[in-house]
Amino acid sequence: MKYLSSTRVYRHNNIRLEIPPEVFHPGFFASTQLLLQYIENLSLNGKLFWEPGAGSGLISMYAAGKGATVTASDINPVAISYLHKNTAANNIQVEILQSDLYSNIPKKAFDIIAINPPYYKKNPITSKDHAWYCGEKGEYFSALFRGLPGYIHDRTEVIMVCCDGCDLQMINSAAMENGFWMKCMLIKPGLLERNFIFKIEKL
Image (cartoon, rainbow, N blue to C red; front, side, top):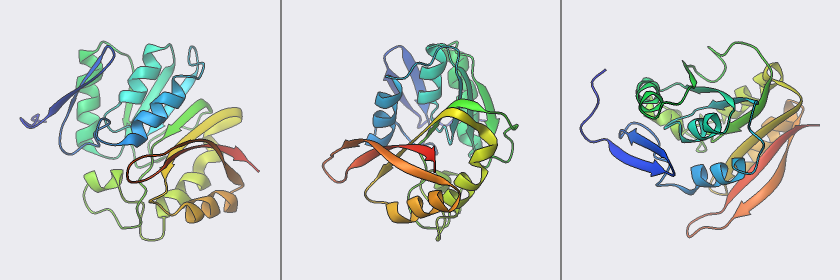
C-alpha cells in the first residue's frame, strides 16, 4: 500500500506515530487520551491485552511497551497497514489482525480488553466510517456484547470509553440484554461533552 503524503506525526512519550487521514487521530479527541490515562494505572506486565478498533495503535503500543502481550485489530485496512508500519518503526511487538470486531479473532480469554467504540447511530459506508458509526440501531454494541463471553474469563477487565453525545441508554440496554452491566469508573468534563470510562462486568 502506498502511504499518503498527508499523514501527520503524533508523539506520546517515546512512541512516534504516523497517522493518515483515514485513521482516527488520538490527539484530536479526548476519548483516546482518557482511555490511555485509565490504562496507565493498570498492571499490564504479562497480561493478554486486546484492543478492538485499535486505529492508530497508540494504546496497544503503550500496553506492549509495559510488558503486555497485545493483539490490535481493526476493520480499516489503512489502519492495519499503518499499525504494521508504526509498530516496526517503534520496535514494538504487537499481533495485528484485520477484523470486523470478532470475525478474525481466535477464541481465547484476554486479561484486559480496551475499547474506544464507534459512538454515533448511523450506518458506516467507508472503512473510515467504522471509527465513528455504530449502525442506525447500534448494531455494533449488540454484536460487541453478544460475542464478548467468548473472549473473557472471570477476572477480565473490559474497559470502554464513551461520551454523553452517544446513546448511553441504548448501549447499556445492549449490555444488559447480553448479561453485562456498565459500571462508571471515571467522568471527564470537556468543553463540548463529557467522557466516561466504563468497566463492563457480568450481571
